[in-house]
Amino acid sequence: MKACVVVFPGSNCDHDCWHVMHDVMRLPVEYVWHKQNALPKVDLVILPGGFSYGDYLRTGAIARFSPIMQDVVRHANSGRAVIGICNGFQILLESGLLPGAMLRNDSLRFICKHIYLKAVNRSSIFTKNIAANQVLNIPIAHGEGNYFCDADTLKCLEQEDRIAFQYVSESGQVNMDANPNGSAANIAGILNEKKNVLGMMPHPERASEAILNSKDGRVIWESLAAALN
Image (cartoon, rainbow, N blue to C red; front, side, top):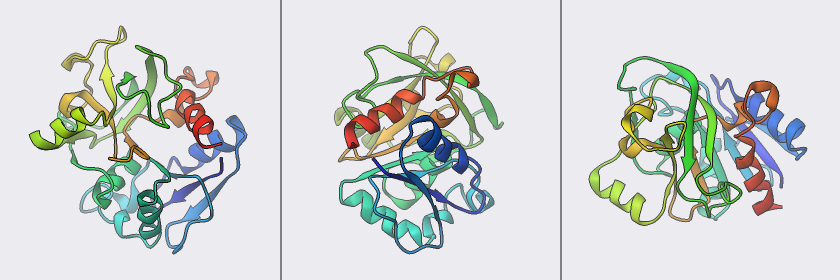
């Protein structure tokens, strides 16, 4: 599996993603500057977290128009893998590759802490290595992570098994006390219809090594490697 990490002005997790691919997973990876018009030949595109274009207008709203995004959309529509993490998730929403929108956290505060989540869909290329009822300890860091969609879209996500992750308690219970930002149905990540595009707010690249106090996020990269190699 070969990956690329798209770098926007304001990205701050691009090297974290590159490090996980190159140094932890030992897989080929390269950076792609947002002004490039075409992606290299890769199996996985990573849209990292950060504050693309300073989060002006809305998070991800300007990055959606970066030249590289046209080829990212083409890559996704051809059935190949894309993962958007935090700001990358927001960009996927703005680009129309995923449905819904992000609102300010219901606390109106930036939140940076470890949370717990559980895979709802465990058959996707991103989640196939996650065990049933496995609770993952992965950090979040966002001010606008409150996922919103209308009732019909939520029903569609549920019926089509497109909710990838939900925020849960340490024991794996889905409840509002475990919801850090007010997201609808405790949603922490969703998939597109083909299930080759994942957007998630938690940062698996920040929890892929024991030295970081959790390596639970590594299972997502391992799932991808197993599916795409």
